[in-house]
Image (cartoon, rainbow, N blue to C red):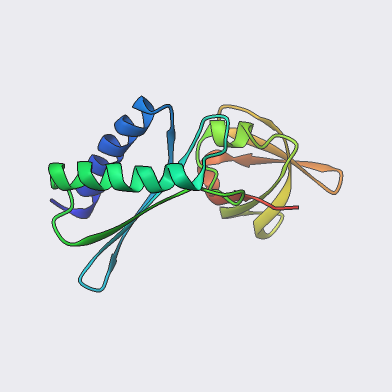
Length: 153
């Protein structure tokens, strides 16, 4: 299987298992390191907050499931962790959770000559995020966001 197929299969298997546990898959990072693969799974509750002991248990359970399914064709290191406050914002629901919070955006196209913009999210539309920076409201197209993270204040 090629890398993208493996990632899609992992997202499906892991997402299904987590959903059954009442948890969400925030992000999946799959990268080659040395002779193997490093797989980081970021997990949270829909309302936020997961304990370290839960991550340790999930690490064991997901490791067993992935070994049984034999999805990753080589040796791998599995890490399950909480996304933390600086979690990546990817979907509309992630941005909705951050209304009135400060977020830093890394854009594919500049706004006012800048590809890095931060501000407080005022509202979120289907394809837009409205942020306020120093009293001025900007519209950011979601499809122009390469990366976004909440700023810890």
